[in-house]
Length: 348
Image (cartoon, rainbow, N blue to C red; front, side, top):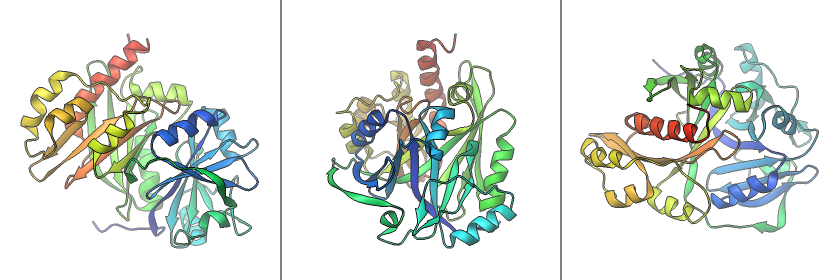
């Protein structure tokens, strides 16, 4: 079936976070290799960049972003998505079933940015000036006289961002992305751990630049429902950052206090038989607790942090001619997450 790119989507421009404790998120972003280089002229909103990834940190009272934080805790309150024509994209999105956002925090050359409502009533800003070198200046940001420049950890772009939703709403959310933007379903998962499970649709953007897996839990105490309880609704569960050298990236990340999930040793006794064509050093992958999955055509390497922005976490991923999501690792991941839930007393 031919993909229809209804809004002429061209990828992700920025991801916006909000918290009343910006210091901890500031330190987190620096630890991940994001340099703080700009600040909004009139609002407490900082801009961080690494390669093709831009993060905004909003701690300005009386903004949409801060209001979203008050409802959810530390959060992903908005995203900026690239389109050819923002006015056309918003009009078409509304015609196709989206809701226009009337509450926006940014202007472009004096005009409110066009935006629609996304997952959990977050904002999706529609950005058509993404090729402009002065985009963020035109949005009201200015370069810092004393920027916080840190070592790049090799994170190049957002590979995918996963949404968690209430049981029974996965199709509704999936249909929103399909009908409004033209996303296509590329995978369906039914995943079981020892005590809990989840089902998931993996959707790909019509320009094929990123994916959105959508998860719903199958048990009351599933990791998905724990997220929904803490976040007080559906939203972004994790953001996957792509690197071309995961061993180098994680070796640098491990010098910080960022914690990743523990993987049991038994996993490594069998994974290299299942995925035999890995060129990286198996001992190094086990030492860093990097997960491996693939087939005869290629493989991926991935690792997951613990929850670090409220219930939100990061994934680091490297792909070598393999475009799945590590489904061969889901069992090991579920065991690790369930152990973590048991330690915290959530899962008995």
